[in-house]
Length: 96
Image (tube, rainbow, N blue to C red):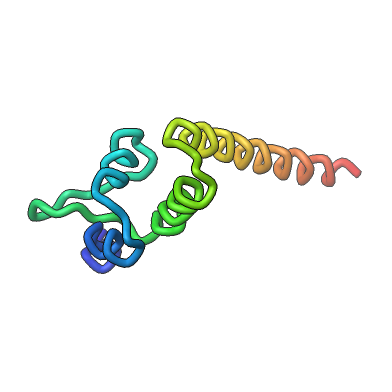
């Protein structure tokens, strides 16, 4: 991935008025993959919506990191099940 696909964590912290501890908590729970380059942390731009969802859960709904981890796992499983259902429905249409 090139540099244009990365965004600085410092910019995100400044823009969303976050503290460093929040970002460290996200990293420790492995909720988002960060990239270290030249001693600075970066985030892939495609993960920005996921980070913003985590920010809303944590600050607006006051969900702790463990809860956010559980929510992310459940949403991932639900998406996987939804894809499986879609595939099965498509196969079923072939036999109708």
